[in-house]
Image (cartoon, rainbow, N blue to C red; front, side):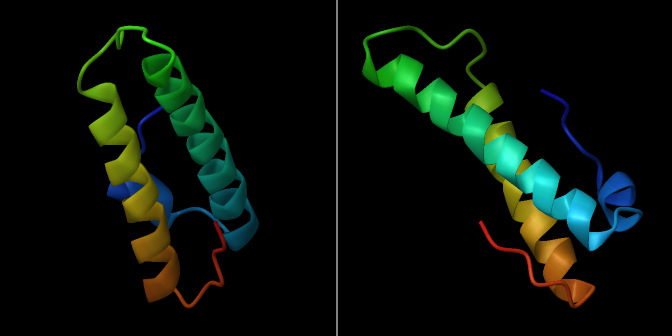
Length: 70
């Protein structure tokens, strides 16, 4: 998982943003699945950082006028 900075997201095209958003959502779902199965989170802050990155992608995409679904 790569956490993205605002400057990196601003440089992305709409297609790349969409791909990153899908990738981040899949990874977040995988982490939630591990936790719900009774596992322990490897990194406690990872889930919150992933959610924040997803929000950044959606926010910056909206500012740029992209139609980001996900």
